Image 1 (cartoon, one colour):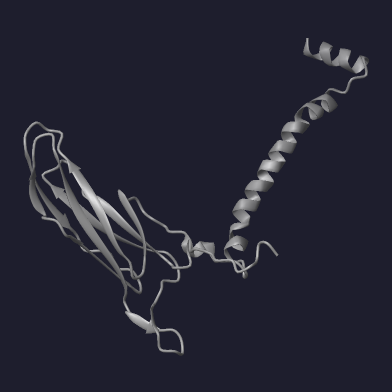
Image 2 (image 1 turned 180 degrees about the vertical axis):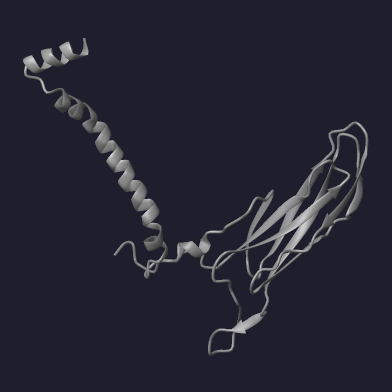
Length: 199
């Protein structure tokens, strides 16, 4: 049956192969367009990151491992992170909070402490709020960067990430993994353009 169809098509002067190529051509163009765009985006990452006239966007990309809470900050900042702990049981629940030390980050000192009581009791179907304060300081402290003697905070060259665990004793949960991403000050800065838009 198949060979008879081919014979009939050949007898009528139709080229089946050409018909198939014509049918596939729109899909082929769409695939080629998609593939070239993918190659440009993947292959163009290096050129976009290394544009001499533009900012280095690669330094603003953070490699953050699995974490429950992500805090983005910069050197010199102090971040206040409120954490609410809920008790859905119909009886009170005693809670004790314990914050681990932070992992080491090159050139940066990360400090964090709970400013609220670390031991408390949550009433039935109630909640309690804990306040975590995170401070980011340069390991070198202040550095003079100009001839006038004005001190400025040193900065990180690219994104650095520090981790700590917050253990919530009394809750049937694993420790809360906290990630602090320390960004260079050149990331997402406010741009002031001195051009005159009306001239």
